[in-house]
Image (cartoon, rainbow, N blue to C red; front, top):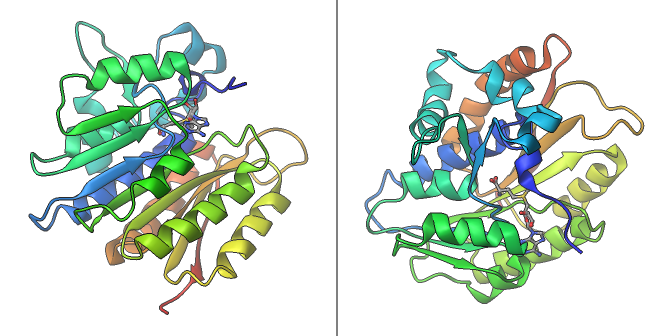
Length: 279
Ligand code: SAM
């Protein structure tokens, strides 16, 4: 049974990295007028109140978006601007957007989005949030299967975000087999896979599986509040991007050291690694 609720983690350092990468890729794709599709296989509720009981219980956002208020680094502004734009709604303030709300804010009239969310409560919240937007389709079904069934998209260009909770340990294998299948159907798509570093050996295996997959052009970006530990929960989180825009590595290589310092309070760590080059 699904127990993960993103409301406890919204706005943490892992979200900062994930959503920064998401914004950079969507902005890159929108340099051309041609329509794009955004597919979110694990969408969550869409928008989160940082003063909710759930967010305050973990207070994870304080070491994430909470440390970036007023930050003036130019390369971070597109992400911070979207977050600021979505921080108030229907008389509520102190909101933090999930990946679906960020995508919605950036989509143009010619673009569309396909969102999958299995949890009944989060699906209900997400459907309500998106209900008046005809560009966006929300489905309460398995995102891994939904993704494969929807490829290739008519637009032939777009971003796929794969952001599972890894509650089920087989997700570490499923993400690789799903990426291999998806890439066969839609090789030019940009894929962004989120992962947590809880046990480093699992991530070493994930990286090796992707290196061996035959998929070219794979870049990894990782950000952590501290070095790896044995059994103290998530210490770092990463994004693995297939077909990254050429601008992404330049932007992330500038921001990751600064973010590690700012969010990790002197103990932060980061990585930027090419897992596969050109075919
Ligand atoms: N992508 C969201 C964001 O950045 O705002 C956060 C998503 S959260 C990490 C993962 C979500 O996946 C949870 O809301 C969970 O209910 C949902 N989920 C778990 N397994 C799923 C599956 N097989 N298909 C679709 N959604 C799933």
